[in-house]
Amino acid sequence: MSAIEVRGLEKAYGQQVALRGVDFSVQKGEVVGFLGPNGAGKSTAMKILTGFLAPSGGSAFIDGYDVLGEPIAARSRLGYLPEHAPLYLDMRVEDYLRYMGEVRGLARATLKRAIDRVSEETGITERQKQPIGALSKGYRQRVGLAQALLHSPPILILDEPTTGLDPNQIVEIRNLIREVGRSKTVLLSTHILSEVQATCDRVIIIHRGKIVADGSTEAITNRASGGQLLHVELAPGRVALAPAAIRAGLAQLPGVDRLSEREAAHPEHTAVELLCTGDQRAAIFQWAVDQGLVLLELAPERTDLEEVFRRLTAA
Image (cartoon, rainbow, N blue to C red; front, side):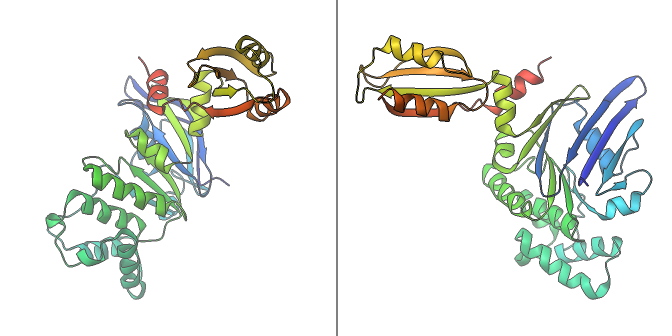
């Protein structure tokens, strides 16, 4: 059973269609980045998952519970941090967390332990006595995350958790999400693509109400490139093959779709870029050994996720 399951999800606001039959799932223990430009349907999907909106069609499940048919059970399995955390700035941190715990029905006997636990997990133990309004934006986000973790939910949905933070605060929250993701399922919405690469196992990209990509960052970037791009540089070893012969031999290997010349680090070296179907590194390595050549470089080129996102969501 998936932690999050979305089937044929649709949502329309009058004549404006936000979601067009969206399907995706998030497995237990995954940290998944949910990306999309403004107006793509990302926030609408997350609001449906968290019970703030009803879909026009389709269904959504949280840990097996239908968000429409079993809303209380679904929400009990879920921790949610919206883009603007629902904080009462005049309350002290511990009073706010106690209030949120009481709203969620936590027993008084366990509430103090729960507050201490999430305070330690999010690094706000020393801020418990302070008014939330006196905290920096980064610490307010930590308090928001603490309330989402208070009832020990197995699933977290985080909507733009680093919006408005400075670079140091972004790193702190990113590390916190990575730590939380070791024991929970996380669906993370963000516009900061480096954040996705640093924290997520998988990426889902939505555009104009439809999923346009779903997979690991490497798989998505390879697909956008049309295959795996490899940088190869060879030097003479037992024999000295002519550069033209080396290029011809590499181009004829199974799985190599295209070969382009690159500038080599030394006049005696041969450097190429190969576009391959599938992972051909082992075959290239063995070919170089068989030819008596020294393999100096065999590295995949990392297509930038930002460029892939731009291509997939271009108007």
